[in-house]
Length: 297
Ligand SMILES: Cc1cc2nc3c(=O)[nH]c(=O)nc-3n(C[C@H](O)[C@H](O)[C@H](O)COP(=O)(O)OP(=O)(O)OC[C@H]3O[C@@H](n4cnc5c(N)ncnc54)[C@H](O)[C@@H]3O)c2cc1C
Image (cartoon, rainbow, N blue to C red; front, side, top):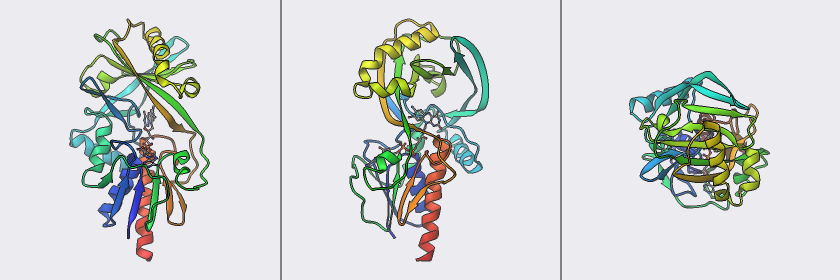
């Protein structure tokens, strides 16, 4: 049996990993230069900053087990349970689930899953490949470019700004949810998150701010910097880098763990509450379905 998994984000990698562990060969094909998809860490000035997912949370026992294994391997660590919340200038602290981060950047977790898998990078799939089963592990609008998958999902964009400063001149806040703001949705202290204390903040925009600026994201650097400086009362940043996510966040999906059309599957974070855990569970659920089908052949 041959399985081709298109997309080396956490969903595709979790799927391939599970298949290979069950003795079913899986080839992963990814258009990017690296694995991880939105579990993304980009290198600026010899240091990685997390530009996609800000942290990882777990409430499913299986994914909690995965995080614990990464902790034992030194790849992930519990970061914080508390975040600041800014609502129109009013500040509070919120306590929530343990948010996990990765000393080597969150993408290192995807790299760990990809170890010993057959992954082809820098290969954009444009038509459905020949295989016994094909898994499109990506946002449905991207899957739709490859095959008529008929999965309707609404997605919202985000612009991420990575701001470096001369020194850490902000009070400890780990990360901040920003409500009712025209530009910002969250700001995270990347040095705190990664554990190296670097004076780097990573801000995510709102979807409404990003949408009209997707054609020229770099032009938004000034507005993003001004918004972060005003929010935290900061001096000018030494550098501002902007990353565009056209399909950043789906509207939360229904009860399905994945979509199946014969031997074609679509999986990812749109099948549940949009987050890393959902993508991982969705990819694994596809693998279990394929393993079950293979026993019927
Ligand atoms: C700004 C931002 C902040 C976020 N914050 C959090 C957070 O704090 N906590 C959390 O849990 N989640 C967060 N998320 C969501 C989290 O990143 C995703 O849920 C998860 O990474 C999705 O994984 P995936 O494998 O489903 O999709 P993706 O990571 O999008 O993977 C899809 C892969 O498919 C590839 N691909 C697409 N088309 C093709 C093609 N034609 N050929 C080959 N390859 C293709 C892409 O390059 C990509 O690598 C955030 C996301 C963003 C963008």
